[in-house]
Image (cartoon, rainbow, N blue to C red):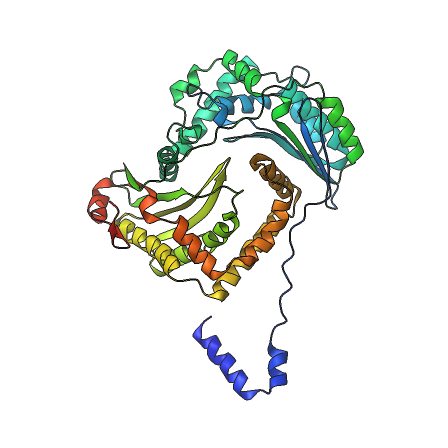
Length: 463
């Protein structure tokens, strides 16, 4: 609160009677309401496919996502990028519905088809007019059970992936994130870098088809349908289209064993005017009782442009245009991370301020009003994220991936509001240990060496 507003309020208190003051006071805020998942129909086919149907909203649309627990973590060490190629080739259609016909069919349904490959999951999804929901489910079922995986499309898909990875990998921030992941996860798939052009060029269509046969199947799949849908019709379409899908492999993701040790990694970019900074350390996964408190702590510290670290290094000091921190969950694991790009000559200054904000939070419990503002923001964003079909699917996927009960979501808003200033301080002390953080800098090594020599935090030399 600024001083001019305090002065104005003090004058009103002195001049007005008690009744007038009561009229001027804002009404008390409503008690926070927990998020409740909409009522839904859930069932599992004999082959292992899990399905959740959620009637939701008023618009005559339905969002459908078929999520397979198959991603980059299922690649062997000699197969980087192969999951991406296989997933992309799914959009080339099936023998009965080739790519051009597939695009036409989806367009007639009033939607589009998206295929995305991530670390742990491959997703086929789209939003179509409600009356086409059953037909879209049937179409997705055909794509995953009878993909064409055409040999003639492989060179094009491979070349496109190479171009995208070249652009992505050229960014200093990407290089910093990859080095950070490699330092934390080592030989685990989470720690692997990007595939090389030579590795991508070497893949044959036989390898593509072998990966599909090895890693795809009904037991790894979950179907989510959210919107104004005829639940009975969608259920019938699901059973008809997917009951004969081969069960395939069991769900399997190797849990990482991240390294929490203090280390500084500098990747040289001679002449760079900016330094890309990525820093952090392992914390606890979403199933842990401290996870909700860590989210609140992070929101206060660096989770938005109004948080403490951005206000310091961007607003007050002008070292950067932007800064963000977050709690980043993966299967069986999460880490706290901070990322920013700072002027090269102020790299060490920015790091000192980041660590100073961490230290301040460890030494002083935050003011009650600051925490209340953060809690309201965090709770509000949680509810907003879940106010669309795509948001609901995201939350259902989160529960399924991490093996969490429905009650987990309902507990999030109340849990955010129960965190006290003292708990925020205690969590910062327990988890944000400067001596255990991995710090990666991508910048001009010559300009950084002198700045970082003898760098100290809390009276202890880190590097």
